[in-house]
Image (cartoon, rainbow, N blue to C red; front, top):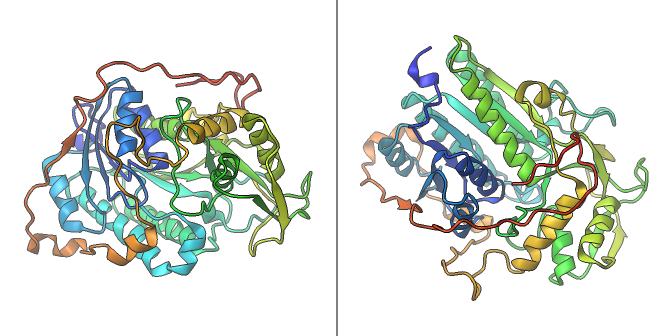
Length: 427
């Protein structure tokens, strides 16, 4: 096997979109393992503050260098690749709101698909073929039954966001097939990430009105929203409300580490993965009312809600079958529903305005404008014209001097059983 297929510790891992919700939690896990990371993010829907805090949570292990770069600015992206020899890439960068994708589909196709093509072409050009892609369970579309969804289920996304993930997956399958025995590509299909790091230091900080249930519930709990809208109460479920597979964000971050270890395990063989999809879900379904009642226990009071009409395209139950991930990646969701809600509430109470500056925050927070504005203002250069657009090298921002003192991290005291595991591993 040639050196390009091996994950070499002396070479950094490229993490695109590493300042975002899922990215920042994964960064903590990777830094804790002593990994060397280069992070790029345009900070459109994220904050550089999350990276400062991730470094603190990792007790200053590993190394982290940040470049403010947009994946659509291919010339700037090329400048980053010229400075490092990457061993692998974990690709989070992209737009992710289902509703917004229907309003500005071109922006979603441009950012998610074209941006990914830019990243992939540069990886290929610079002889790095280890790639972990942040995909989504939305690629499955309407489930054909209430049974847990396996990776070989029919694919058919129902909205522009989901279709960007589906099309990127198809591109990656084609790339792997075009260069047999060269690529290690892992497609991680997320179900519903919720919660926050147990410390309360990092979590989800959505712009405007949250698109997903639990960030909205948390904002109602903290007083930023008046009431929770429950869309439909007449599904064929235990309480009539929609059932989904929710996964703690730390478990999800651990899934990326497991995928990386899977790629590392290929280094000593003459085989490669090609392109393989894996579900990251708990395999357990929770209804909307389960989520509201459990969050109410975390908050210490009943949260207000009202039943409204179903949303078009919603289905009663969507649950992952995580068997393949357990078998191939040795990964299982370990944290409980109560852990998800307790940690989310800790993040929300400690950061009522998200990463907005407070008197206790010494490092300035980067503003995060709405993604619609980002789409309208993005500098779009396609990869083939890189050589004709010379750019000076970017000056990296290093966080090596941050957080010299290790920080204690509170551990959830929940004793409820964890989905898919008998033990509960806290960071």
